[in-house]
Image (tube, rainbow, N blue to C red; front, side, top):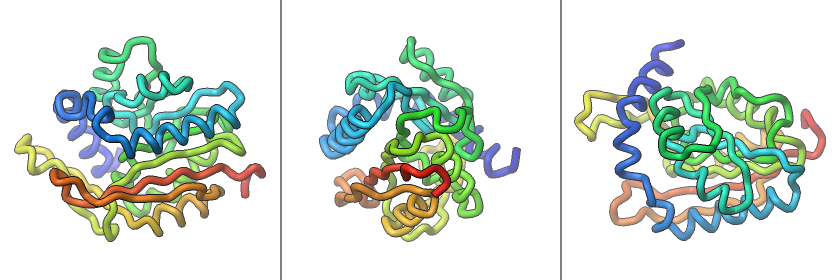
Length: 219
């Protein structure tokens, strides 16, 4: 495991219980995020074949109950073993496993769709092509992917240090053009892309995207 990946994994092991405290129930207060996830879920249900959806970078598993309420079965993946332990503890009956976005633990076209909710921001530029290719590999042709991300100029920043927990890790805030281009290059058609201004307690605006996997595998 390279230094950057180790640093990210170790930091999120420390952050697992912090995320439970800060993020549990937060989706109930975010109507735009619920609307995007609701649209994604409707698209997957309409085009799906009964396969699960991947929750890529699932963290503490907070999206699993919402996706289940939308009629979807999710399978969560996260780099941090402690995040997965907490997800299994807090959301029994859901599937969670340790994994890497650059080498997802799913077979080809195994998923009807996937969400990457604030998880793409941890990818170093050199790793993004591999991660997007993996997403394209595991999502069936005609399936959908939804992502949420922090909007910025793609400059590397250090995350976690403001929490005074003795941790740090690299994060990237993406431009909508960068996110859309990455999905198109991986064989997706962008069907929805929007953003919102930063809330009073946020530093930067937020972006949302839904993309459809090409019907022709390999395009």
